Each structure stands twice: as structure tokens, then as C-alpha cells.
Amino acid sequence: MGLASRKFYLLVVLFGCCFTSLGAVALGVDRSHDILERARRKLESKSDQAHIVLQIIKASGETKTLEMNIQTLITKGGFRAIVRMTAPAGDKGTSLLTIVHGAKTKQWLYLPASNQIRRIAVANKSAGVLGSELAPEDLNPAAITGARAKLISSNTKIAAIEITPKARTSIYSRAVIYLTLPSYLPAKTEYYIGKVLQKTVQFENYGVFSGHVYRARLIKIWNSVKKRGTNVQLSKIIVNGKLTRRDFTPDALQNTW
Image (tube, rainbow, N blue to C red; front, side):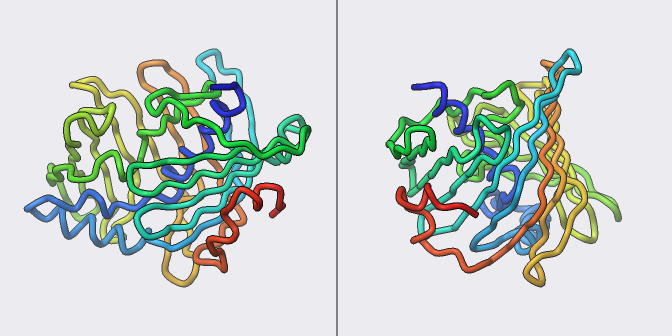
């Protein structure tokens, strides 16, 4: 796989962080089912688009910034997503289309320098790229389909739900989702391998869009093992806009938004 395809696979991972749905994790027999269902209803949408500023924070304190426009569309049995780079200047116009249907994923990359659209192979699903702390498993509902959900603590302000994925469906052995009450919005997710905390993802600065859909406008990812972080800042958010399948085809990669 070439550098460009590894690089832009990261951007698809962002959809998991920015527009995730909790519907796939509603198998608890306790109150966790009700809490997660309430959260799902506040987060669920048919389409999303946003401008994203991605700041990668290295262990040395050095930072790197990327900017991009993102569009997603939920389809029957999957979803479609397009990422268009806007900065830095050397990457501007480079675009990636991802179509997921069931267990199958297809991707196309557009490189403006050569004015070519080509099919690419899907990147390693467990590896972070671009030096960021994002991996395709992170906040991916498909990775925890059929997982067990258990309410482990609750008070008037916050509920903590432990998610245990099926074997071989996730790189993590468990995750703990903290949801604020009575808003039922995700505030933080902790990811573990065994007893070791690997990553913490915080959701901040929620806004309401399309009348009733909530989106975090700031997402902070911290790798406790590698002592590195990634911040995701969202703006120009549009939820349930007029996107259709025609906006998510290889030919559409050359369009601008």
C-alpha cells in the first residue's frame, strides 16, 4: 500500500470519532440498554458534513496540523464517506472515498497533481497513521457489534457503562463509556487491553443541529501508553443535509465543498 492510501485512511477513522452511533452496543440486561438507547437517539443521523482541524501532539510536545472537509451518508447495510484535504497546501484537493457495505470496504483516492482517480487497498485496521492516536478500531460501532454492555456505576450526574466486545472483533478487551445525566451524551470513553488503560477519548462543546441531533465540536484523544495525543476540532457542521448517493461516487471526488 502506498503512502497516500495509508495517510488518508486516517481520515475515514475520524468519522468514528465525530459521528459515531451507539446503537450497536445495546445488549445489556440492566439499565445500560436504556441509557445507550437514549444516547443513540440524540446522536443518530442520516448524513453529516463538517470542517475538521486535526492537531497531532507528539510526546516531545511538537504538533502537526491538518485540515479537511468531511461528508458521510448512512446507507442500508453500511455508509459512504468522502474526505477532502484543505491544508497543508501540498495535500489540498486530495480526496478519499470510502464505501462500506456489510463486511466489505472499497476505497478510491483522487490526486489533483495527476488528476487521477484510482482504487486503493484498505489500510491496516489496527494501526494508527500520520503519527496520530487514531486507529480504525476506535469508536467503530461495527467493531463492537454484539458486545456486552454492563452498567458499572451511576449517580445523578454520570453513568459508566462497560463494553466487552466479542472475541476478535476489536483490538481492545473492553471499553468504559461515561455518559452525562440527564443529557445522556457521551463525555469520555476509556479503552483497555487487559487491565492497562490504552486511550482516553473526551467529547466536549456539544451543539444541537438539525433541531435535535447532538455533535461534540471538540474531541481529545490521549494515548496513555505512548504519551501522545490528537485533538479534533469540528466547525461548519451540517446534520441531515441534502446529501445523496450521487455525492459519494468516484467521479464526485473531484468536486469541491
